[in-house]
Length: 337
Image (cartoon, rainbow, N blue to C red; front, side):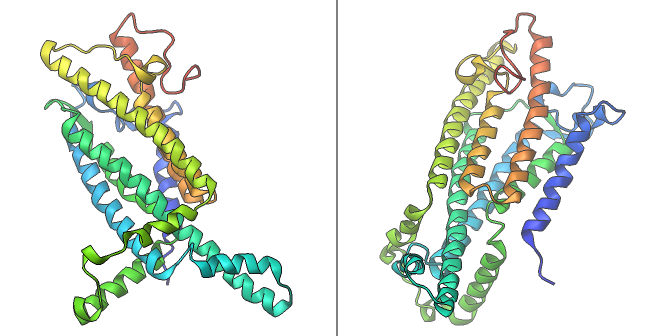
């Protein structure tokens, strides 16, 4: 029985989103479910059971970088070897299908058009994984060099497992449509390499590889991919700036042992602009995906619900901590919420 990766991922995202939606509804479960999302300053000192150090955030991004890199390399190599999207033959078949008629010819060109559409999907997955790689590499760098987590800062163990789940499922969701064929191809290539060895597989040395051939098909992607990338970069830049501001505040807290109100960039509008930027980032990924994959929609839904809950808790903490907290700031959505 063939395992459908996209269906498993959709079920997993729905299972992860449902408890968060329940947490938004007043009930006897609300306090417990909201407690899972608390960490750092929003986690009360009396709620230290089932927690881990907040510096374990590093684990998320190590997993994310290793896993995203592996998926990217496998998908990119599969796309280059098996799906020559952007080659002259595929472009010619697309043009020819509009210029010819006849049932048997139409059928032949329909298969060509299907090949072109398949090539678009696979190379789109490569593009999305490149963007994800850019994101997780920066987050790994920031966790090591920008954020100096206090030894007393904790997060709930469920939040820790949720983070590991997210950075495993998110990159896979961006390439879930082509993942089964990519895994099969990679397994076959590995088995062939073990049996034949490098020399018999005619693998050229790195210095002799024409890297332009691997990159050129990406230039033939649709306008939606590039608009999505622009949205992604916009959110990426602002998240980097907001993280730099928060990182500098942590240094100040070590000096005077007091929390201060952050200012600058999107902090003018919301209490958690880094969360808002994260939503923009994944919104850009959704746009770049073409918006036709339900799995990516559910990925974005998880990000929105999860970060909205976290932002609400952070906003509440700021208001309680600082009597003169700026009234114009909202939790996560400027001027609205």
